[in-house]
Image 1 (cartoon, rainbow, N blue to C red):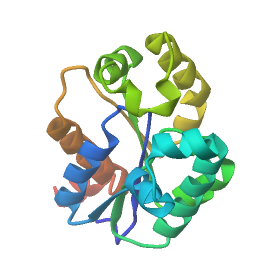
Image 2: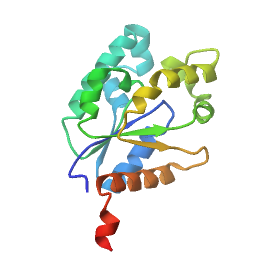
Image 3: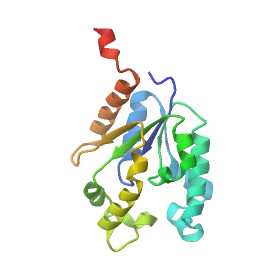
Amino acid sequence: MLNGTNIFLIGMMGAGKSTVGKLLAQKLGYNFIDTDPLIEQCAGKSIPAIFASDGEDAFRDLEQQILSQVSAHTRLVVATGGGIVMRSLNWSHLHDGIVVWIDVPVNVLHNRLKTASEQRPLLQTDNLLQTLNDIYSQRRDRYAQADISIMVNADETSEAVSDRLLNMIQTRITPNRLRQDA
């Protein structure tokens, strides 16, 4: 169906890109890659440690390098970091595949992230909800440039999201499929 075309998942931290990505990769018979662990492996330290010792710009440089290397391969579902969309050069790599925005309401992200925010450098703040709203506002227009957007409901399982996303991709790739089969 996709002829090996990669699928790049973008969206806010906590949107479920890694979980949905693994399920989607299984359904497609693709390999799954999460860029964050690759960045940590490349740097030899955790993302919070990269931010603390080298700063966000150094992290974004590594992220850009990893994306460049990953996008050279095929048959991948790639979960990217939430801020990957902020660098224009990254879009040239993202557009080597199908870009999918997993859009989750900020209040749902807040509920998901309030117990794990200490592991996320950008969420080291006194007002987590306001910070998430600010980050979402900064990135929303970039996320909206995705080929496919899927809005996730608060009570929707990752399995349901991956099934719905697979259907959206199939419809996008072969919009006349049903009429041809009839």
